[in-house]
Image: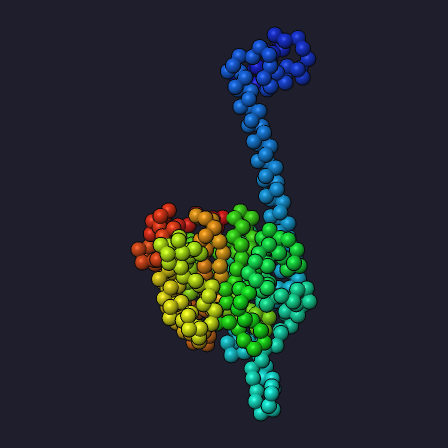
Amino acid sequence: MAMSNETMNLTERDDSNFFIRFVKYFIPWKGDKSSEVVRKIVFMCSIVLFSMSINQLKNYLVPSEEAKSYTKDVVEQYEPKFDENVNYEENSGSDDVEIAQPEVKQQKREVQEWAKDLLERNDDVVGWIKIPGLEDYDGNEYINFPVLQGENNDYYLYKNIDREYYESGSIYVDAWSNINAEEQTDNLTIFGHHMGYVGTSFTHLSEYKQGADFLKEHPIIEFNSIYENNCKYAIVSCFMINTKAEDDDGNLFEYIGYRDFNDEDYKFETWYDEITKRNWYTNDIKCTADDKYITLSTCSKLIEENLRWVIVAKKLTPEDDIDHIVESYQDKDDKDIYFPAFWRERYGNNKVDQGWQL
């Protein structure tokens, strides 16, 4: 029976004021039948749950907007601007500097102009990363951040560029990799949170699960250390990886450990074989141990926190034909992809995309 009819009937049989009659309709009252008591209790529980949901939604959305506003302010103030054309011979920001003996010269890189104000704000800044064209409805890139490097890989997990608590954390480079005036690690691992519906940090890397067509639309990652200008990387591999050996029958590909390929325990050939067999896509990109790479790593929410979604990209060289690279991206058959056992138990040997929120 509709509430209007109920309240009308209450008026006919109850001489108390309207407020009392109204309360009696919703709250268990002496003389109510058991079915009526149950109805009222269910209704009250629904009201409580609805109020809690509204409060949780508010707690969820307000920090999300604050996080986006904070990031937007940083981008507007510090984002480096480069032209579209890459000069592959002069994109390192390097100068010859005399050292030791006057006749000996060593390539030594200098901090670029775009990075100097950032370093004044935080001297842990080591670069800037951006995925051009991966944008929200307002035309702002989802991934467009300064990159930091802490004393360990937990330091910037929940800190912003001002070293204050920040739920989305920062984008940061593996603490045991080198980015300095003398050298840069062969393969830099760069970490960022997956923030679900909030959408900040590295959340939108999950969009690369969509398929080769999406990859063709967004094949390039721009990463510049503070010593570089206008460097671009082409995506080589996208894959799921376990972080604990027990989640893959005792197998563990320690992708973070492959920093420099001259390390006896971390050979390029082994690394390349692993990122190739796990790759969701095929391509014609030529990769060698002499190239430079970045590895972007974020959590996957499709199962549990022990899985990571990883994207590897190679720094473009004069020999690379970006149009050919883009054309070469193809979806790999599921049967040809290596998935961790933990994944296969849940989804079989299949690619899964449930949206960037997961």
